[in-house]
Amino acid sequence: MEISGYQTRAELLLRNYMLSDSFIIYSSVIDGIFACKLVYDLSQIFTSIYFKCYAKLSKSQQVEWNNQSISTVHAILVTTMSLYLAFWSDLFSDNQLSGLVIMRSSTVSTFVLGVSVGYFLTDLTMILWFYPSLGGLEYLVHHLLSMVAVTYAMLTGEGQLYVFMVLVSEATTPGINLRWYLDVAGMKKSKAYLVNGFMMVFAWLVARILLFIYLFYHVYIHYDQVKHLPSFAIFLLSVVSLVLTMMNLVWFWKIVKGLKKT
Image (cartoon, rainbow, N blue to C red; front, side, top):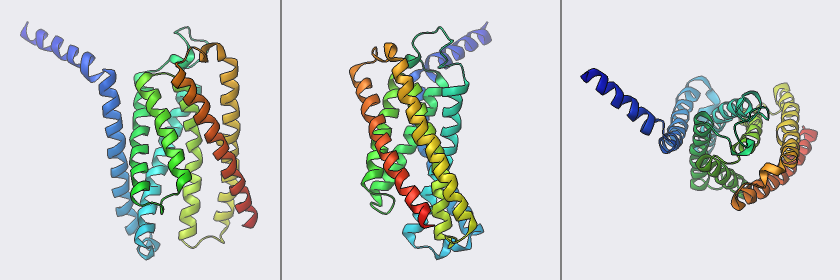
């Protein structure tokens, strides 16, 4: 009887605390921050061993190298999970009858958003600390807008589908970082650098232009649901998506111009 009693208490603890929304939120954000620190340290160790050019870089370049490692790992993980949750899983499927699509969330989706919040907090802190070597005003605007939108969706569970659609745009990050690595490694005239440029243009066009067009189309055909969102959520959906779209178009033009020079 005593064993059964302890087992019941353990199950209640797991259900009421370990699986509670607040625990998932706090733990995921903390996990995201610690994961960034871990990747930064591992990048520092392995890069210094396997890349001879690393030792020749300035201190600020070494910091940026390791910072790029963080953003690359985050981009790969969050793009994979965002594609799965937004397009492959049944969570946001129109065929499901479990409430409005824009109001759906799950433990996994909330955890993924929490990890991203941890990343954006870490990266934003590094950008401010080393400003402007890790990015100028446009990076601050991008990260602040992204962090506010992701945090809101994580805390409320509202509009998570659209946040995951936007997070798919992180698929372009590894290519951008690879271009920077090739540049500082003295490979700007290599074929790899040229191929990387074409791949960047294609990835940017798909993930940051066409996908955003689809997002606006999805909002349009689901407006009967979108109008049920709170005013602040509609404001975020409108402003953040429009501002990011404009930034993506500007950056796309710069990427195309850079490729022409290559």
